[in-house]
Image (cartoon, rainbow, N blue to C red; front, side, top):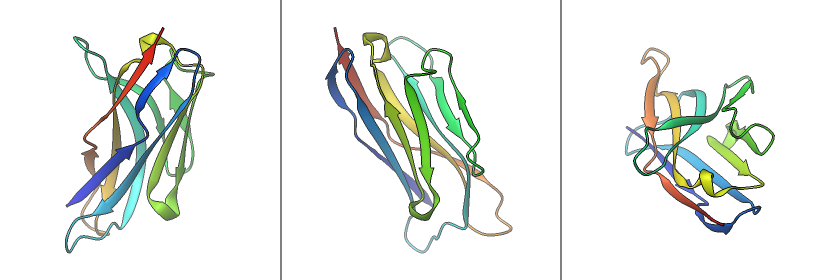
Length: 125
């Protein structure tokens, strides 16, 4: 019913920056009623998916210790979009980054968790 489309990944040298975006939209005949928490997760080869950062619809944020002070999560509720500004990137930040959102399509539907398809971030040393 809802799709999350990520963009902004790529290849960058260590110390560089990237900005990821993730836009939520309803598929055919589906409109988004509201979006609760949104977030970014990542998965490196051979590792489990891990939380990077989350943001509530009240703009409360939470970060993994490994990215605190380097990454900033934000959202634009009018555009149903969440962003991840990544600065001072390190080779260990290399992973596929996934967008996550809890979405209601009606007042009575309840929040359902959706995931994006993932975008590759590669940091070279």
